[in-house]
Length: 209
Image (tube, rainbow, N blue to C red):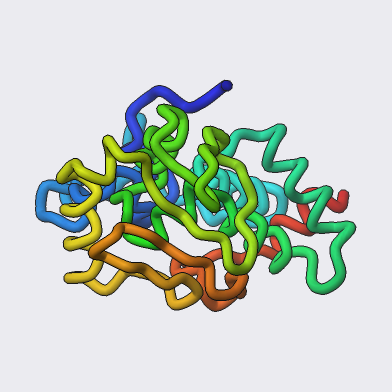
């Protein structure tokens, strides 16, 4: 499986906002973005205004980086969203929100989507009591998300959940039992559940050319 392996802090700097790619570190003063908000590379003489294709491309790259999706699977999500009923841009974001790695993150079991993918790829995650090792797995209503015995008795998930509850980042479309470390998908996510500013219509315009 192809994945991005380079430093992620510069991705936030490139997009000009925090994408919360390093989990707990992004919530502290140690976050690189707090001190270095300028884009990576040589300093520009003047800030260029993004219009047209450049603005569309920048928005697409931002969404890909937020959810940790590369170009081919992202285009596949768009194709699927185009065939669904409703608004294509909103359908695209809902499909991305329904990914298993994002669901773990929204439940507070992982401090970042990257950590959630790590849990999944190592076979620690179960959906309806069956092991699932595919991060792009699409969750459905009433799906039960849990961990294997090894992870369930460890402290990492417990600490992650404790931190998530303290800062109130658990999504309202999921329900979490912190004692048993089990999450339930109460309903499918909606557009308003995406907490980072995204102009999805710009992405639709880019792919519709």
